[in-house]
Amino acid sequence: MIKLNNRDCEWHEGLTVEELLRLKNYTYPRIVVSVNAVIVPEEAYASTVIEDGDRVEAIHLMAGG
Image (cartoon, rainbow, N blue to C red; front, side, top):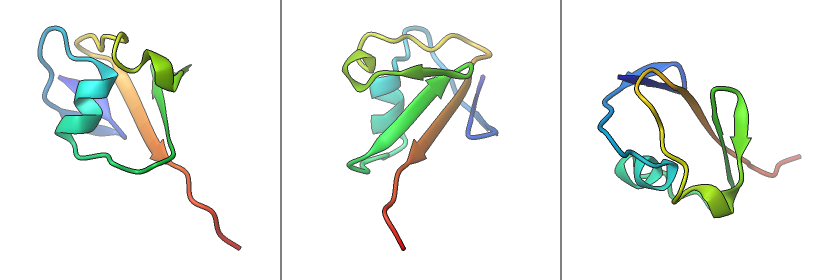
């Protein structure tokens, strides 16, 4: 089990940031992801493995005024 945006989320061995975003239908064009309070660069989403118990934050950026 992991925490995704402070909610319990199912986890499986080998889960990557890229796969998690796809499974949760995060399709925003601008998104910032951190794992255990460390920002993950977008180019590392496919290679960053999420471990059991990790805390993941996925925040989409919006423009406004």
